Image (cartoon, rainbow over all chains, first blue to last red):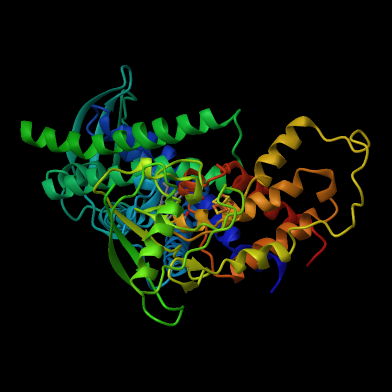
Amino acid sequence: MSWLTQTLSSSIGKKLVMALTGLFLTSFLAVHVAGNLQLFNADEGLAFNLYTVFMTTSPIIKTISYGLYAFILIHAFQGFYLAYQNRQARGKVTYSKVDNQSTWASRNMALLGTVLLVFIVVHMAQFWYDYKFGQLPFKKYTIELAEGKIVNTETMPEGYMLKSKLEEQLSDDQKTKTIIVKDLYMIVDRAFANLPLVLLYVLSMVAVSYHLVHGFRSAFQTLGINHPKYNPLLDFLGVWVFGIIIPAAFAAMPVYFYIMHLLH
Amino acid sequence: MHLTLKVWRQKNNDSEGRFETYELDGISSDMSFLEMFDVLNEKLIAENKEPVAFDHDCREGICGMCSMYINGRPHGPLQGVATCQLHMRSFNDGDTIVVEPWRAVAFPVIKDLVVSRTAFDRIVASGGFVSVNTGNAQDANSLPVPKEAADHAFMAAACIGCGACVAACKNSSAMLFVSAKISQLALLPQGQAERKIRAEKMVAQMDTEGFGACTNTGACSAECPKEISMENIARMNREYLGAKLTSSAV
Ligand code: HEM
Ligand code: SF4
Ligand code: FES
C-alpha cells in the first residue's frame, strides 16, 4: 500500500475524508440557501427562475456540482462504513445499561445522515431531475424597462419548447423586454401544497440542524483544529449559523408555500 | 445500607456470560466501592461460592486497574475518579447497582469483571517511548522546556491507561488514550527525534487492535478519571496527518 492509501484507510484518514467532504457539503449549503431566498421575492418567480438557469448553465457551477454529487456519495458510504466498523468494535455483547455522557446528536450521526440521504434522493428526484429531464412549463415575463416592473406574466401553452433554457427579447419600441424561462418556481409552488412533503422537508431540516450542530465543530476537531482562540467562533458558526439559521431558512420555504396555498 | 447488585459473571472469554443478582446488607456509606466488593466476595466465599473476579492494585487512583462499568458509566457516577476512589456515599440505601466489564473487541474478558488491556501495552510498545537512554536527571536548565509545554505534557502524562475512554465510547475508540501517549512526548524536547514515526506506528497499531474510530462525542474525556482533554485527540490528528505528509517512510 502506498503511504497515501495507507493514510486514507487508517481510522484518522477515514475521519479526514468525512471532515473534508462534510465541510464541502456545508459550504454548499450556505450558497444554496442564499440562492433559494429568491423564492421569497414577490416577482412571480422571475429571480428564482433566472437563478436556476445560472446554476445549471455556468460551467464553473456545473463542475462544482459534479464534485458535489461525488462528495455526497463518498461522505454517505464512508459514514455508513465507519458506523458499521465502530459498531463491530464493541463486540457481540453490549452493555445492558448505558448512561453515555455525550450529546444525542454526536451519537446519532449515522441515523441523522440516513434521514439526509433519503431527503437528498427525494429532493433531487423532485426538482433536479424534473428540471434537467422533465417537461417543465415555460413562463413568459414582460418587463417594463423604465421602472423595471413586471407588467405581464403568462404560462406558455403545454408542449412549448425552447432550444435554450432562457430567451430574452427586447420589444420594437425598446420600452419592454420579454423573458421566457423554464418555470421551476411553479413546480416548487405546486409541490409544497402537499402536506406530507412539507413535513418531510421540515423534518429533514431538523436532521440537518442536529447533524451540523455536532458535525461542524467535529470536522474541525478531526482536522486538528481545537484552539481556545478559535473555538468560540467555530461554536458560534456551528450552532447558530449552520445549526439554526440556515436550516430554519430552508424549512421556512416549504412552510411559506404551504401557508400561501391555505390562504388562497 | 442495603444494596441489590447485578454483576456480570463470565468464566472466560470463550464462554457466555450472564448477570447474577446479589443482595448485600450492612454496607457502610464510608466504604469504597471496591471494599463493598470485598464484602460481597467474603460472603460468597463463606457460602462456598466462586468470588467475583475484579481487577485492582493501588486503590488510590494511580494504577488504572480497577475497571468497572457501573450503572452505565465507567468508574461510576463521579467525575474525575477511578472506581477505587468511589465511595458508597455516592449511592442510596436500597439502590440496584449494575456492574459490567469494559466491553470492546480489543479488551477480551479474562474472567467476570477482569478484561485484558494488553492491546494498550502493544500500542505503547509500538512507539510510545524514547529510544535513547536519557541517563541521570540533568541540570534543570540544560534543556529548556517552556512552562506551557511542560504543563500540557504533564496533563497528558496523567493518563493511567485504565481504558475507561474505550469503555465509555460508543465506538470503543482508544483515541483519547493514544492521543495522551503521543502528546506527552510530542510536546517535550526528548520526544522530537521519533516524533513522526511514533505517531505513525502508534496509530497503525491502534487500528490493528480493532478499536473503533473517533466521532468526537467527548464521552471519553467526560469519563476519564484523569480528565484527559479532547485537545489531545486534535493534537494526535495533527501529529499523525503531518507525519504522514512529511515523514520519509513511503
Ligand atoms: C448523504 C447522507 C449523509 C450521511 C449518510 C452522513 C453520515 C455522516 C456520519 C455517519 C458522520 C459521522 C462520522 C464519524 O465521525 O464517525 C458524519 C459527519 C459529518 N457530516 Fe454527514 N452525512 C450525510 C450528509 C451530510 C451533509 C448533507 C452534510 C453537510 C451539509 C454533512 C456534514 C457532515 C459533517 C460536517 C460531519 C463531521 C465530520 C467529522 O466529524 O469529522 N453530512 N456524516
Ligand atoms: S485517557 Fe483517561 S480514560 Fe483513557 S486510559 Fe487514560 S486515564 Fe483512562
Ligand atoms: S486500583 Fe489503582 S486506579 Fe483504581
